[in-house]
Image (cartoon, rainbow, N blue to C red; front, side):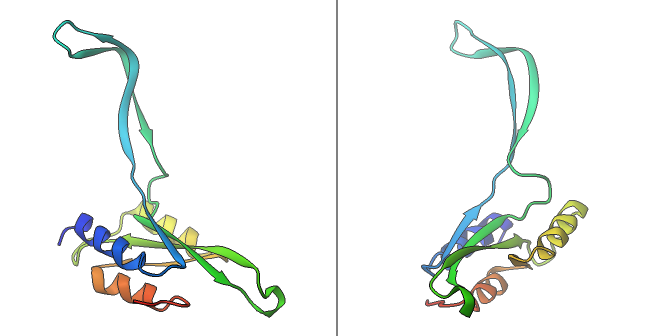
Length: 134
């Protein structure tokens, strides 16, 4: 399986838990400038400039909001816990930016996640989340 297939399968598996809301993170590069239509239906972009859109480099592939009840002093209140998943193939390696971002996230009090090298590892991590039903 490639990373895209692993991500899609994990998104389906994670979404089976009604308390979890997974999001796939996409980034991209595009061009902006002054467009003009050509007679043949194509477009020409004058003064083209590239721009990057999306989250910062190293942001995990999937982030998950975990809605759950919290400790005794806050009984009945709900909050969202930020969870993340960096997806790799079995031989996939983390970039320096990914390592830095994961370190940043794991140092936050309301963030937890893993690097998953396949569907099984990622699915198992989210099965351990409160109230998981498959």
